[in-house]
Image 1 (cartoon, rainbow, N blue to C red):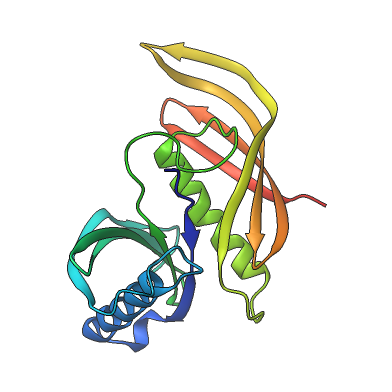
Image 2 (image 1 turned 90 degrees about the vertical axis):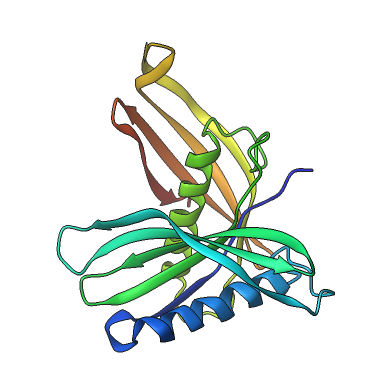
Length: 206
């Protein structure tokens, strides 16, 4: 079965809440996300709890403290079934904290629909940042859910180089279509691969 990643964003002032309050807030959000049918959860289960949480990507400082980002895995015990979620944090220099929650996918196969060339980890990273960008651009609107309904390569790889079986240079462009509460929204993403990894930029397609 192919799962589609979903993202949800909440925001607040990170400096205004003690750590225990933040943990309670994330706890509630993850459980609510897991119970949401629209987010791919199971509202029929009435006995769920957080089974564990752990850091998956340590804090990485931005250009100006306290800005930075990090990720955690939160596992929900959903009526006896363990369901993992990745929680991604982005802290701005003014202390504002953006949070996205995505269902962690299985290691088998492609997790996002369409013909994207991105591997599983790059798909997840791309979706998180793309959903955050679209949510930020529509701040104040009631729709808070995003999901990818299609991906396609619109410009194949150019300047590609391979060393020891892995790409170390090259760039390509894809179109990713988001479902924004029933409305399709298209973005053009330019991926650039180097020896240090793959980065991308996203622009709304007019």
